[in-house]
Image (tube, rainbow over the protein chains, first blue to last red):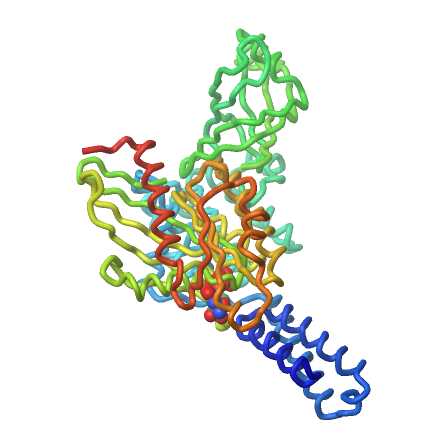
Length: 300
Length: 204
Ligand SMILES: Nc1nc2c(ncn2[C@@H]2O[C@H](COP(=O)(O)OP(=O)(O)OP(=O)(O)O)[C@@H](O)[C@H]2O)c(=O)[nH]1
Ligand SMILES: [Mg+2]
């Protein structure tokens, strides 16, 4: 094959890669071509050829860089937004399905539309806590955090959210703001409210109401036990094991891994695993003698 | 997670086209939309970036008539293949019933194929599904480029590399020209429906 011919076939290959959007492969090919030319006594003095190839490489480098840039999320048409709501809601329960649809809109960056949905759900009283948190998330994604803070203030003086939910929402917002390095005084919910224990709450964990755990050892190995979640802070849930079930409590030793847990949340059931990260015997109150287990959710 | 409505005797199932970015998933759906017009039941919806790369997903609804007394409707999706869209891939994969893995036959894409298959396995595992159990078909796409003298991975090598443990049906194809596209989809539907039939036990 003549040198010309060889180069022509390499260029053809490089151009096919470029046409398919395979910029890295195309750049590699042109670098190869450049090397071939520079090592060729007859061609290496062809300034025009060398420059053409070098230009190609520069352009491809820009294309490669472009791939790594954040893509602006487009505002989708109402039809497509409607389709997303429909396609990404799986629950049979109407409220849960509506919540899933709204969460999908937010995940696909359609914050305005999602916001309207969450507002509607909150006003209807459908999963109000989840709706409220998501409203704040949308505000934070859309604009300055001030809108989220104002929104929270309105809830404090209104009656859409119960005291309990307001406390959760406040802790959630305080945590997000803190993570962003924003110092601000959020309106207090009630004199007694203590938000300190919820500091660790992570944004992405759903609110879990109960769990089913498959026992991996102990006398009841293989069987499944169910617990109500009495407290949740981010990805740590706490459940109570009655003093009467001492065998069961012993099965859950500190640090043990629970590879198969089903988590029930108001909008979804999901499976995952966890680790017993805390175990304390309750010393006072009506649950005295019972065990409080902390389970850290791992993969869910 | 097929939806089975026993009363209306309607079954709705979800097929997802998975694979490395630029491998030809969207091109598959575009060809299906053109060539199987009679079976499509709505427009193809594509949400992509300026450069045609899929940003969220492509969606194409189809109806394939009655099977064992049930009306079967199919939803075809593609995921965005670019590595950075991992969370969107997970979302689109949710509730999948059958998968077409579109591998790129170009020699330069060898590792991209492997990474994407691994990514599929992980994402399935996260929703408690096994890549070894889910109805799955492999497609070795862009075979037409052999005519252009572009280095391709031989079909046997692709089978040996990607399909060694999976042992699922595989098809050489050119999504651009349409070769193998129908065969891939039909096989995937066959496996998926057989699987659903066992799971849901619908019968006449
Ligand atoms: N020659 C040839 N080109 C193809 C074939 N299939 C796809 N292409 C080209 O490959 C490029 C990428 O195809 P797409 O269908 O957009 O790939 P994709 O898998 O959807 O890519 P992402 O959306 O980024 O994941 C386009 O330029 C297509 O024209 C084929 O069978 N032969
Ligand atoms: Mg695509």
